[in-house]
Length: 87
Image (tube, rainbow, N blue to C red; front, side):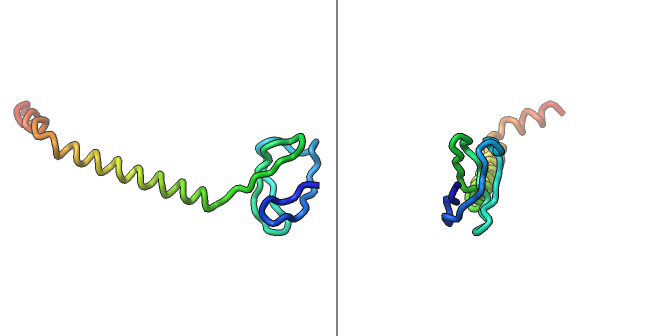
């Protein structure tokens, strides 16, 4: 018998019926659990909060990259002059 790492509830899992990477749900607290090991079975909670934080960090990085691109265009007046000369 396996216990939920979040609430301690018993989870009926057969080692032979689960695969590493499989997602289970705790019947008590309904947290999603990833099977990280099968013999013996080891479960890690999957936190939506962590996913949200990762998404926010990625969005911030993208915004920073966009700002840097805009700054680079403004900082290089020679490129604009070359474009004018070609026409």
